[in-house]
Amino acid sequence: MSVRSTAKRLASVVTAASLSLALLMPAGPAFADAGFRQWVASFRATAVQSGVSGAIYDQAFRNITDVDPVVLEKARTQPEFTAPAWDYFDNRVHDQSVAVGQQMARKWKPWLDRIEARFGVDRNILLAIWSMESNYGEILKRNDIMRNVIRSLATLGYADPRRSKFARTQLIAALKILQSGDIDESHLSGSWAGAMGHTQFIPTSYQHYAVDMDGNGKRDIWNSIPDALATAANLLRKNGWQAGKTWGYEVVLPAGKLPAGSKTLAQWQALGVVRANGKPFKNGSDKATLKVPDGRGGPAFLMIKNFSVIKAYNNADKYALAVGLLADEIAGGSGLVQDWKRPFTKLSFEERQELQQRLSEHGYYDGKFDGKIGEGSKAAIMAFQAKAGLTQDGYPSMEVLKWLRKK
Image (cartoon, rainbow, N blue to C red; front, side):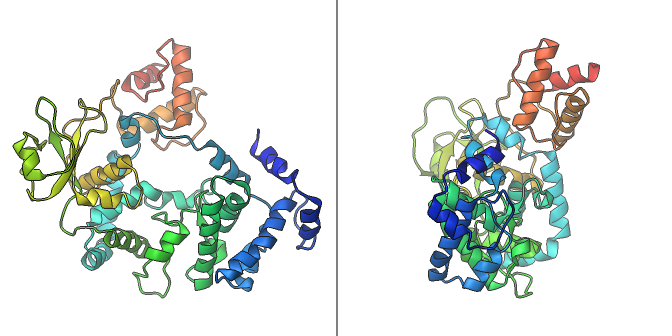
């Protein structure tokens, strides 16, 4: 079912009472969802009781007359992530994200100095989060991704039973952001689920952590890089970031089974666990937990407290590990000693862009040449592999690129 027909199906369940109430609202386009308009009218009282002024509410909704079909489609098709480790990390920790991070470190050094001094959070962690959340702000320029936050959250609050409670809470918080004057409704943009700005904060998190770092009287994570990075730093600090310490260490494991649970780094070392780069652990008394996200044959890590603090941003081991690994490389580190277990030869970021371009030239791919191998790229690779008589695995491999170059 198309997103447009989904919106029309929602409209078909409108009752006569809701239609009559909706008719009292200002006239909208012919395709406007009357049930949604009735919901907007009725939710006004809830927002006002929560501290939102009626004037702000009316202003925020004055041009919103129907649900956002893109939001409904995104909400319906969000898959649970089950891809292998290398797939997740290759799309996030690569030579391009490192190079741009280092460029941003130079460009924003004076502000990063101040943010690091004020909050005690490693600047490279903040740069890595910026990369992970919005590709250093590039996503904010894409109209196909960025949505009106008020409309998105109202759509979810009205039409998505799984997310309605969350969305209504976030909608009230977003309205209060407008009321604060930090941003106006024409610039209150975010993801389909309401994550906002360079560092992608949902409205309630914005309320808790947003910082006016540049001192202009507004906490503007959409347009002010200092505000956005300081807001991320404030979140990490308030969740227990330990200044001057890392997130964890890549390690080499001894043969045999190791005990589970948290131990000091000194205790892990006594069990034969050592750093993969041969250097000593910085503080043997730090408690650490062993993680092997790609199994015993892949890279292994000892995670200390700051790893769990990063998870306050996004409660997923892979996310926090990607932030840590990317931060280390932005800082000048050489990357993993033991690479992920890939069943193919890895491409560089530029080679993956070339792969997408060549797939496009042969009529298999119609997406962006962004070097990120998502479902569209994988489907194109598989279509080409089928035509070429190759195993249809969808891997962005040097083997596939060489075949494309021959063509």
